[in-house]
Image (cartoon, rainbow, N blue to C red; front, side):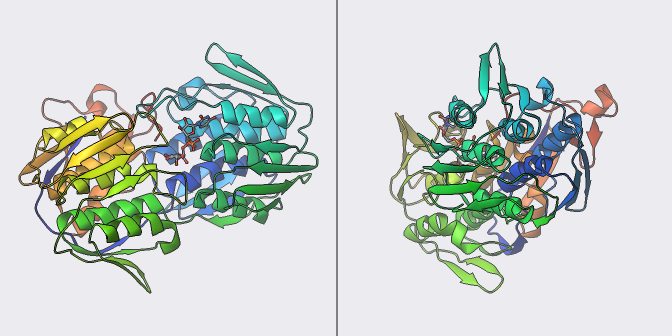
Length: 447
Ligand code: UD1
C-alpha cells in the first residue's frame, strides 16, 4: 500500500549508525524462553519481524515489553506447547521457538513455516537434529509435532550448515541431558551471538563460530542482559548504497570482521572501504568495475547481500556473474532491475549482468526483504524517479531505512501508493507507530 519514491543521482554523504542485527535478535528472543527468570535484550531494532516474534512468544505465555531498543522478556512458568498458525506462517524464524518449547516442556506443536519467494526452504535438518536428541517427530498436513520425555545429548552432523537448524538444535541441546556435538554447524556471527547469550544465562556452549559446536547440557538457565551485535547485512547495504551513488559515507556501529567478504568484493570492484575508529568509510571510486561473485555460507559472500550487490553491478563497467548457491530461487529482483534498464541473463543458478548500462527510474515491486533493499539502491543510482512498492518486505528487516538514507542526503519519501486507500481507514486500529502493520503480517515473507 505504501511505496518509496526515490529521485536518484545524488551521491550519499555523511554518517549512518547501524542497528542491532535482525537475524541475531530473533533467535535470542526465542532463547529467552529457556530461562526461568527475565532477560533484557539491548539494541533491539524496531522491525516488523521483531514485533511478530514478540507476539508469538506472548501467545506462548511470555511477556515482552519493548521500549526504545530495550526488550524485556519474562518467560512463563509453563510454556504453551502449541504455537498459533497465524504467527508461524508469516515468518520462517518463528520455527525457532520449537527448540526452546521442546527443551522446556518436552513437547511442541507448530505449523510449518510459510512458503517463500526465494526457495523451498525445508526444515528437515531441524527435525533430524531434534530426532537425534531423542524426540519423536510427527510431521504432515502442515504441522510438526515433537515429543520427548527428556532430551539427551548426541552427536549430530548437518548435511548443510543451515543457520536456523544450528540455532534450533543448539537451543534444544543446552537443557538436554549430557553432551551434544553439532558438526558442519553454521559459522555465522549470529550463531556466536546466540551462544554468548546462552552462556551468559548459564549454558555451556563451546566452539560457536566454528564448524563444530560442543554443548554440555545444564539443568536450568537464568535470564540475563545481552546486547545484540550490529546488523552486518544492514551495514553491507549502506556500504553498497554509498558505492552505487559514488558517495562517501561512514558506516558506524559495525564489526568490520563480519563484513570482510562484502568489503573484499567492493575492493575488487574498485570501491575503497577503510576501517576507522568509528566504523567503515566508503570512498567514491573513479571506475566501478564488474566482478564475479558466488554466495556461500559464512565466511563466504552472504546470500542476503546478493540482490544489493547486483543493483550495484548493473551500473558497473564490464560484465559480472553472480552465482547463488544458498537458495535456489533468489533472482526475482532481476525482472525489476530489467524494468530500470538493466540487462541480465539468467542461466541456472547464475545471473550474467551486462555492465555499462545506466539505470533509469521505474515502477518496481519488492519480492522479498533484500530484493526490496536492492531496488531502493538501484533507485538511488538511477536517473529520474523510481517508485518501490510492497514495503512490508523492507519494513521486516530495515529499521527506519528511508530516514537513514535521507540523513545521508538521499531524495526519498514514503507515500501512499497511487490509487490505494490507507488501511486505517478501511480497518481502524491495525496500524501502529509509523504506519507499520501490527496485527496482520503477510503470509510467506520471512527473509
Ligand atoms: C537464515 C537467515 C537468512 C539467510 C540464511 C542464509 C535468519 C532469521 N535468516 O535463514 O536471512 O538468508 O540464513 O544465510 O537468520 N535447508 C535445508 N533444510 C533445512 C534447513 C535449511 O535444506 O532444514 C537449506 C535451505 O533450503 C537453504 C539453505 O539450507 O537452501 C540455507 O538455509 P538456512 O541457513 O537454514 O537459512 P535460514 O536459517 O532459513
